[in-house]
Amino acid sequence: MTSKIDHHSAIPLHAQVEQILRDLIHEPDYSGGKFLPNEVDLAKRLGISRNTVRQATNKLVHEGLIVRKKGIGTKVADMKTVTTRLDSWLSFTQEMNEKGILFQNIDISVEWVEPPDEVAEFFNISKEKLVLKMDRLRGMEEGPIVYFTSYFHPRIGLKGTEDFSKPLYHTLEEDYHTVVSLSKEEIRAMVADKPIAKKLKINSGDPILFRKRFVYDPGKRPVEFNVGYYNAERFTYSIEIERAKK
Image (tube, rainbow, N blue to C red):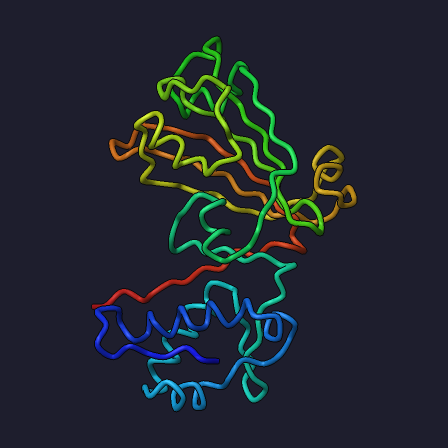
């Protein structure tokens, strides 16, 4: 490790350590299972406090990038299991990119459909009003992990010919001036039926994580109705809650 801390930089020390660690975990030795330098050694090498190092490592632990075991050490997390957090919200592509996980679009399809009852009610439109529906199967080299179905409010103006392999919310903002700012989510466990099991390449009846997302713009107007089916063995939701101060 040759990285150094710039004590004269405007970038906070913990943020500099965080970047050093992000670079380290992509090195072949560490991604291959070698333990990362312990916090005491790292603090000495960089000339900073252990608390600063701990702040940076905590961030990567919470993101699911590294795993810390007391009395053993810290290692790069097994990337065959994907962890996402609920205390911040990005598009799925943006979040995976930040983690350095190369997700693939295995299949994308779009069509104009009459909205299901729940979608029509959320959008406050008639069931005769056609909406754009997008199905996306996404995963890694090892296989599919999540199957998404999204419905978009007709107000947005999507044509169905867009490049949906790009980050979705970036496309909405840049091309259609639609900014998403609020997501309300419902999450529950369920078992995979035959169609979902076939898409995720698991057995019918296997456990999956089901997530329903209601997306709004800054004016609290509905933008997207999205459901996701996650392979429960390959995906984890991580929740961080800070106790309110009295």
